[in-house]
Length: 290
Image 1 (cartoon, helix red, strand yellow):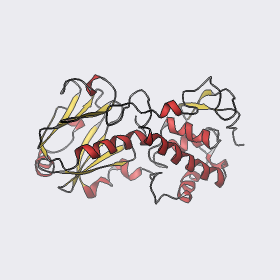
Image 2 (cartoon, rainbow, N blue to C red):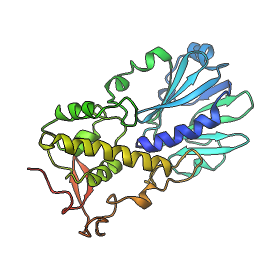
Image 3 (spheres, helix red, strand yellow):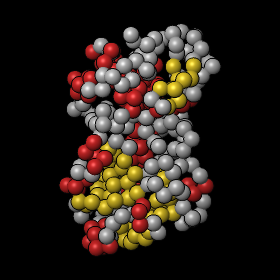
């Protein structure tokens, strides 16, 4: 599943591409991937113009002139592919990004007033596009549970520390992977942030000082900002809104670097399991808090 920098990269590309386009028609082949009434589609999607594309956590929110939104979650194998004067793709990097569309994985097609199209493809059928009034988006169950956005200007270190302290008996890696604690952190950026902050991933959250937690949230922001500037990671199933793989993993310090020397101290990086996830760390720089 994509992490915050990947979804932010897609949002930025689609925001440039889709703004002010008017939806002319929509077709779909998988009701669970497009769980919307025909009446709502007719009244609030068809004929509406796209105002902006936003992100919340790992989901995309397309704001419409009808005061409704399309909330999109790509899950594991979802793609958004735009075909018009320009051609762009984002998501799972199979041939559907560049091949003729629609194909066997196409679930939804939005056609705009200039005859350009946005294809939502999803091989495994876990992703979805939901049409909702703007005021109801925040009431979606998963939205209500989402933690704060770490890159938000209103996000405070005190809030982060408070949320971490509620899980004092959990490993710090499990804690920051919990989307109710902080939105958007996944395995890659958890490992990278913990390495920068010199925190062992299995250290219990309750054993970390305020200074360590302040350093950790600073590190999370740092890796997110850098990754967004580089177009996200090059993990197995993600490319950016221009169909180009991101370059962050070329500059990663520990993720998938097991057997290589730590960039900080030259100790060999190891891979273990923490929070049921493959975890990369430097055993010298990241000593476990007792």
